[in-house]
Structures are given as structure tokens and as C-alpha cells.
Amino acid sequence: MKLLKILLIFLVSLLLVEGCSILQPNKMFETRKGFQFDDFEPVDQKEYRIQPYDIISLSVSTNDGYKLINTGDGQSSNRGNSRMEIEYLVEYDGFVKVPTLGRISLSGQTIREAEAQLETEYSKFYKKPFVLLRVNNRKVYIFKSGGQSGSVLNIPEDRLTLIEALAMSGGIPDGDKAYSIKLIRGDVSGNPKVFKYNVSSFDDIKGSNLLLQANDIIYIDSRPRYVRRVLTELTPYLSLLSTILLIQNLF
Image 1 (tube, one colour):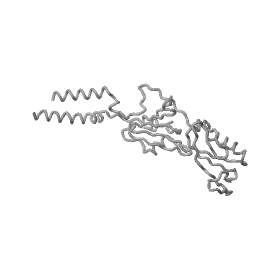
Image 2 (cartoon, rainbow, N blue to C red):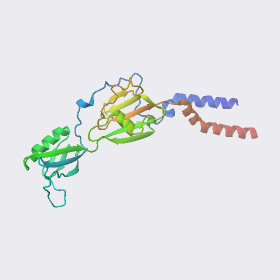
Image 3 (tube, rainbow, N blue to C red):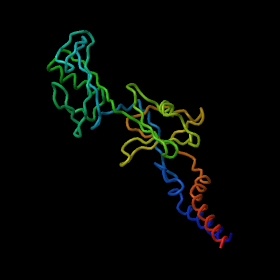
């Protein structure tokens, strides 16, 4: 029994020394103690700007609703409100290849700015062109339970709020911290902004129902549950020790 106690003390000490690397190996986006989170920024004041590798849908018609670019069936149509919508890739250099105009630079522009530019360019070929543009690959990424589960949500054409994203992804699991939700915005390999939100009470939820932007990362911290994790890590060693002691007693 003395040997068993010594080995148990050694294993527990080893786990404590290793810390989170063993007890929480799947933990993501950890912030050091005293980390300075960014202040809340209203998203309404910052429109999304088209980026390389975005996938856009483009619909071109006249103000009277006549279709300008045919759908590929070789026929043109003059019926009211006829529109064509095809997806195009914004290439690595920010240019998009579209019908009639060829390659045109749209990267860095808001959707309204890009629509205005396309209308100006198409007006050289058509009378009063009307352009509708959408970005189809706007997504947010949600990680829960210390990184054990993740999901990807498409941002609708109008908007997606933090509360809506949490609801659409199944809510906050048992064991996760509703008072510690991190929102990471920007290039994670560079210098992203990190916001922290608390939706655990009505008093704290003020300012948390913000509008999400494309490629936002939502990470919900979870309780460490060290006791359960320690027991999980020790179980195979305890089984091995029990087997060794049983064999030792037989001899």
C-alpha cells in the first residue's frame, strides 16, 4: 500500500506540473491572466468590405426589370423583373471576372460601392443598368465545450446577431460559461481584436446582442472540471497499479 500511495502522489504531482496541457489539451484561444479585451464596437458603423476569395452573386438588369445577361440558354427575355444571378470568385488579386466587363477590381469595397461601380461600368453598354450584389460566403465560426464541438453558420443577407448565432448553434451547453464568451475578429495570425461578452443575466446582456461580421470566431469558455479530468487521466494508471499489486500478493 505504501508503494501505491507513493505512485499516486507522483502521478498527481505530474498532472499538476503539466497543468492544462494534460487536463485541457483541447482548450483553444486561451487568454493570459490580466488580458486586456477590446472595447465594444457597434457593427452598424462598419460595413463589410469585399475580400479576395469571397464568392459573390451578381444580378444585372435594367431599371425596368429587363434582363441584360442571358442565363446561358441562348435566349434573351424581356419579361418584367427577369434577372440572372451567377456566382463569381474574387481572385487573389481582388479582381472578379464578370460578363461583358471582363476582370474588374472589387476588393476593399463595400457592397454598395461595388454595386455603384458596376452600374457605372455597365452603363457604357446598357441603358440604366441596375446591379444587385451579394457575398455568399460570409460565415461565423462557433466553438463550445472547450473546443470539443464546433459549427459554422452562414450570415444571412440582412444580418446575424450574437444571440441569434448562439440560438442557431444549439445554445450554451451545460458546463460552458455564459458569462465568458469571446468574440475574435480579424486575422487570428496577426493582431485580431478580442471582445468578451456576458449573457448570463439581463443586466449583463446589454451590448451583447451585437451584429456579427464575416469570419468572426465565437468561443465559449468552459469550466475546467479538474477533478473529473484528473480521475480520467489516472484511471488507466490505477488499473495498472491494481494489477501489479494483485500479482505481487499472489507471489
